[in-house]
Image 1 (cartoon, protein in one colour):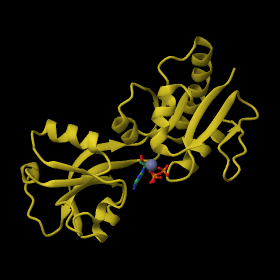
Image 2 (cartoon, rainbow, N blue to C red):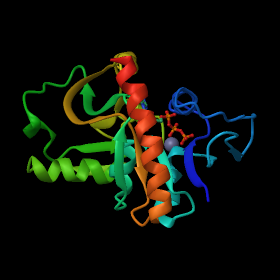
Image 3 (cartoon, rainbow, N blue to C red):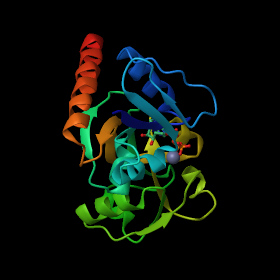
Image 4 (tube, rainbow, N blue to C red):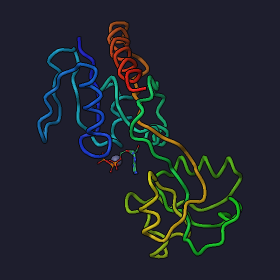
Length: 211
Ligand code: ATP
Ligand code: ZN
């Protein structure tokens, strides 16, 4: 019996995900362009996927575990179990508007068009603050939307804010704080749960050693 874990194939979470497994003493040989690989010293199979696909693979049970941003987990909305926060991939999902726009409160978003790749999370946020705005879902380069007249505001991931600044935008609302998390399928067998506990124990030890 093996646990199958899905991690990002390439991108911001890839390196840190591999590093975490290595720090847990799990040896994997991750060749370029590989779809999956097996650990040599732990019953673990590693799948390399696009981060957006990870929640569904875990929900479907094609993978037992996944390492993915909380932002993606929330947006997809599957009933996955968040087992452990991992302390990397930290960012926030924020609403930004053109620097020139007068902005005093969230009321100023009323009736505006907001471009985002996170329609579910933004819709939730608007409902919570009782604002009616139009959501325009776009998959990439969200920060250019105001400049090309597609929307008056955006909601996108931010870490330093330099991308916003370069595009003449200012951050006005913090919608969500996010970091990478370990998620699990909600129907693991006892045997799988036991292996998961072993993995989580090691992850916690790695985290403790860093504090
Ligand atoms: P993929 O090809 O896997 O779909 P992607 O382009 O959607 O990749 P990345 O940009 O690699 O995704 O980001 C992956 C995750 O890293 C994000 O979902 C988020 O949780 C986290 N992250 C941390 N900092 C940032 C940031 N400044 N901008 C975007 N994402 C960030
Ligand atoms: Zn993605």
